[in-house]
Image (tube, rainbow, N blue to C red):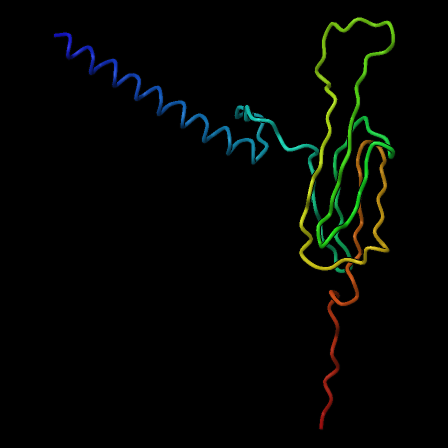
Length: 152
C-alpha cells in the first residue's frame, strides 16, 4: 500500500514542476509583450530601456534614464558599436534616516551594434525629461543613391 502513495507523491512533484515551468514560460512571454495581466519576470531587467528607430538618413536611439543629468551619462561610437554608459546615484540627504528604499543607485553600460556605418562627427545626444535621445546620421557611403539610367 505504501508503494502507491510514493507513486502519488512523485506524480504530484512532477505536476508541480510542470506547473512552475509553464508559469515561467508565460512570465517570459508576458514580459516581452508588456502585458499587465501576466506576472513579470523575476530576473533583473536590462537597464536602461532602449528603443532604436531608423529613418532614411539616421538612426535614433531613445533611452529612459530618469533621475540622471548630462554629467551622469556618456555616449560614444567605437567600431560600429554605440556605447551608452552612465551611473545614477541615489544618496540620502544629509541627516536623513532611510525608511524605504526602492530607487537604487545603478551603473550601466549598453553596447548596441550599428547595422551600418554612421557619421561619428555628426552624432548628437540630448537629455530631456529623463529621456536620452541619440541621433546617429548615416555616413554618406551608407545612404541610398539614385543612379540615372542613360540610353545608349
